[in-house]
Length: 269
Image (tube, rainbow, N blue to C red; front, side, top):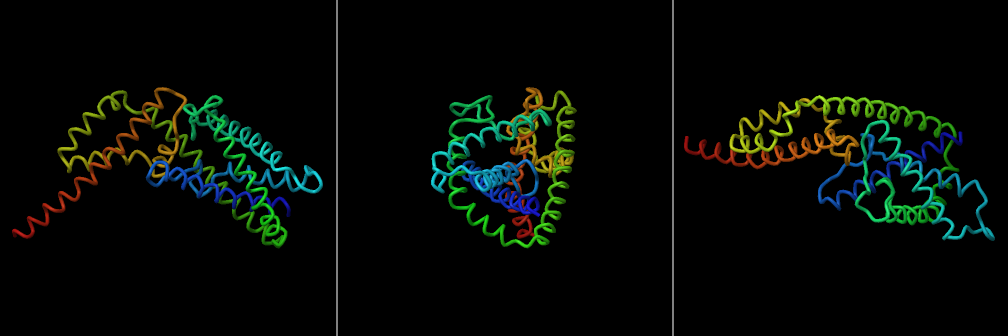
């Protein structure tokens, strides 16, 4: 029963973590950014962190006169988040040879997996969760009926498991497609874009032919991954993203012009 409640809590915090990630990255990039490793609206790393806080501060005696010092909460949350973020980044990179975040340009970073500013931010966020969110969460969790918690946990577990399996298979397939691209494709991208920009009809045909090689899930993953550990694969992925962005923007620009011309021709007739 307690495990079921913790799992439901994990999914809830993962969902709110996804909202935070998407909001922050969208504001930063000035366009919608759907973040996360999985395709569902969850960021599991946030769920793991929040549930860990719930377990640590809810089940272990870390208090002085009944109150846990704020500095102690901050240190534990910051240190714990650094370990969680580093280990998660390492495991994902070893499995998929890709990074979903990269702090290489941030100050005081370790292998680009963690950095001091992010660790401090997560420490502050963890402190706020422990002080203000967990008390409410513990109350709600205590009032949750055991049967309801178990049913919800099984349902959510099925969704997460299916999403994880589909994500893993899609990423493996994407990696194989990147590795199998023709050697001359990257060298011809700029030329293709220049030529196609003068011919909207061919532009749409080339765009449709190219994007048909990738599923929607793979396009999502392509733009979610910050970089690949393989230099060749990283260059290919970066070039493909630039190609998709350039072709997509040119299509959008060409469509209104063609629509206006069609309207003018119709008026003349």
